[in-house]
Length: 267
Image (tube, rainbow, N blue to C red):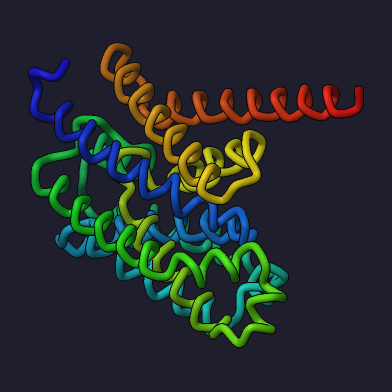
């Protein structure tokens, strides 16, 4: 398996993005932004499709659409955006827009499948370097702003009382989310949000420590990507199917673990 360059590229890129998604996912769940991550993934799909239609790098289209949407949500306000009944219309519109761009691009159907659901053969050396750059950037910003982000994510009232720039932290985190969503070559545009939310959701059942959640979430995300890549290589089925199956199983395991802890405490 590892004698092929595309598998080496897929494992390197997959490990990096899984680590990034595992870390940022903890804060996404703490800030109740899973729905916005889902929204960004739809918008990212439209951006990638536009890039294909325009003949530019798909990553450029992804970044353009997701960053602009992050700025829009930041200006509107996260709470208002979640309450707005037009969100479903926005999601449907961008999904339809993406399909339109793909239909006009004259690309083969397998390229469409790659954008939507990911592919282990779709990662080349250039993609690896792009992913390395984006991952390092996101992780560096998260590390630099960790204290403020942790405070605001897990104790927003206290952070506001302490005088932290809540609005700018929120907008900055949305921008980081938009960049993280743009790296979809492994999982695909429509399912990237699964790796940004499910491992972090499962990690909350195993520990109450923020650092512990980050470590467990990252481990689950990486193991899920490795499992998906190996199974996809041997079965030729979409990698996203195996990743989401693994992460769902880990979430159910976390539920069972939490239930047993509660029963032991009650006794």
